[in-house]
Amino acid sequence: MGKIGVPEYILNKRGDLTVGERNRIKEHPLIGVTILKPIREIEGSLLGVKHHHERYDGAGYPEGLKGEQIPLLASIIAVADSFDAMTTDRPYRPALYKDAAIKEIRNLTNLQFDPRVSEAFLELYREGKF
Image (cartoon, rainbow, N blue to C red; front, side, top):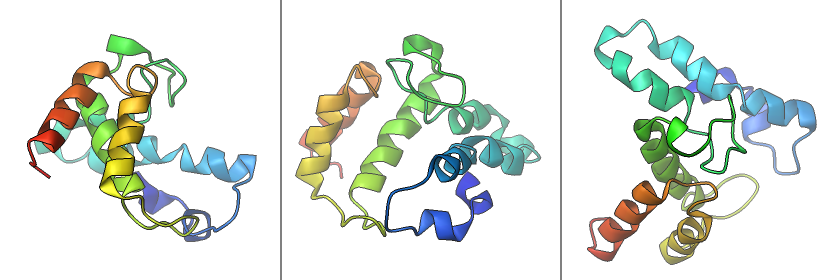
């Protein structure tokens, strides 16, 4: 949602991003919260939107939350968003096959992803749910 507030030339750039461009992209969770905040029916989802780029190891943004400090909804969104990003063509790279994306999620468990969430996601994949 918040990528609406990021200039299109940054989102569609084929080469490496500058530090300034990366910082603009890192603003998108907070932009998303600003856009969604007036909608009272989804108020409980705002922490998920805000923190979906936090990492389980604490190296994420916007606040550098770590482990179970990260709201569960944000951890769920993080895995789903990452899988979608990996399996979708981007201006800077072609989509990965689902199996390659699954392997990446498995490899990033306990680093980027909450192990509870990634294991549930991987189980759903093994069951053929997506």
